[in-house]
Length: 295
Image: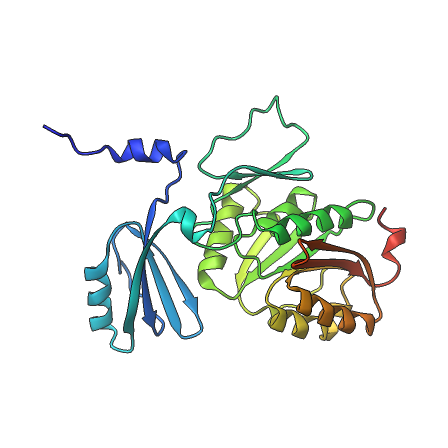
């Protein structure tokens, strides 16, 4: 007689990753929060404008249909099934970026006798994008190391934080007060979870809100790996010019060219620029001559 497969065996084969197959339900409209809305198989709700993407670890068509009946402003549009690696576009694994080592939270911490020079960041991205494997993340980390060399920023504003990986890196480098902001509630919830995993709640505060509403907050360094339309509004704001240093990323070629033209008209300096495969662009600079502050 065949015995049912032990799900723990499947998890071991996936190096302990708690996410296997994803069941995604696409709805028009935003959910009204209700206590105990779903079972334990519910991963999260990604909201985009007036649409909701509900993620589950097992089929949940019945639960979603009940939800739509009880909240008639919602409309069921479609459903999808894919592996976690397909959703993240690649398998999330340990990686190195300069001083940093980013580890999936479900992997064991590195031996304290090895990799002692590395600053370890534990990350559980869930279904939020930002697992550290995108080239813009690596370039932002390079820029951040540069920003912390001689005159380390004490206060940092991370706009469009996603999973919180850049805010966590700033804290690891010695940032004392970091505000990590994301418009998407699920991203803010995920970033907060990662702050807890890394025991950095004293240094990093996570908030859900618009980047444009937070740019006036006082900070030595502003980091924005974000949509160009939002970034354009940020750099044209009075609050942006009050920051000593900036890191701007997530820009395609045409967007980077347009941003460079805007920055050239402002009283600041671009010290360095990174380009990955001629596609993704990252700017590092600040007000005044920061070349005297950074090597």
